[in-house]
Image (tube, rainbow, N blue to C red; front, side):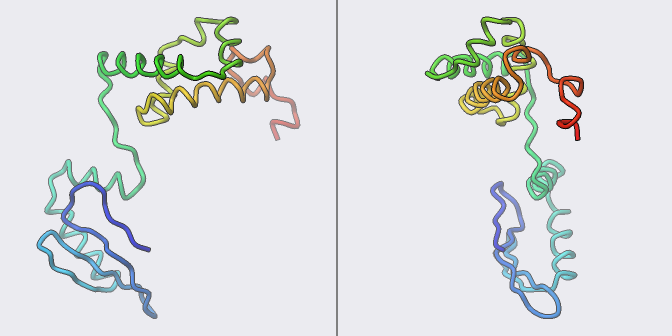
Length: 165
């Protein structure tokens, strides 16, 4: 295992060195000091280094370590810009028959702002990936549930007994 935090931080894990009976880590701190220690000592060093960070820096590092996305403030202007980019990329996708069928059946459903933003958020505000996911969503939904359910929210009542199990 080797890792390196992508955001600026004071502690960087360089590598783990397997050693019986405990696990050792080699650390490089902000001061450039490299240390090798057992997990217990490493926990103390990490805690000390993390406590020296600002609250914002610490939260960013903890979110990154735990695989949590960095949340973005969604102002009205930010949302409008992302949806404009989303629409631009959506128009550039050549094959989107299921999407176009859904658009014809219920423009209100397809153009719902919160519905579309859920795809933008799922792709961490990457409008191109969100547009591709949106098209794929309608293709999959058409294939799995048919045209009758294409522009409806799917609930448990839409599934057969076998599908519920």
